[in-house]
Structure formats: C-alpha cells, structure tokens
Image (cartoon, rainbow, N blue to C red; front, side, top):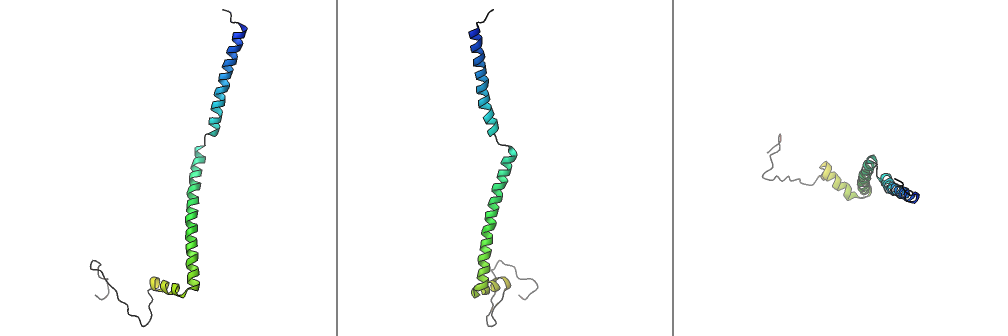
Length: 109
C-alpha cells in the first residue's frame, strides 16, 4: 500500500507537534515541582522565625523590666516584696489560709 508523500509528511508533522506539546506541558510541571526537602526546610525556617519573634518580644520585656529596676524605686520595692518576701521593720505580716489549704508542715498551727 502506497501512502502519498504529502500525507506522510503531515502525519509526521502532527506526531512531532503532539510530542512537542506533551514536552512543553510536562517539563515546566516537573521543573516547578518542589523538592520535599526544600518544603521541609521552609517549614523549619517559618518555625524558627516565629521562635525568634517570640524571643525578641521576651527580650524586650526583660529590657523594660531591667530599666525599671535600675531607675524606679517602687519597682525595686515590689520585686523585693514579691520575690524575696521582704517587709519594712514596722509592718505586720498576716498570712491568710483558705479553708481547703493544708496547714504548713513543721511550723506552728
């Protein structure tokens, strides 16, 4: 069976066009597909950036507290009362126990 040269030529052109179209559609998709390791690293980077923001906010709060303790006498007094349990010599300290709190061990009732 004889195929005309024009038909053979057009069949070859259509086949090559299909191959080129599939290549054009497939190659960019494979190039744009992300590497799973890169996605994992991006997730870790986002988490570390969030941690850094949290730490920066904590550092700023500590700097404000340090400045308050350096210059504000009432801040020093509040810190000494809360953390160290200090009181002035003429103050009377009252400890209030709730009914459901256990009695302190080893001390007077």
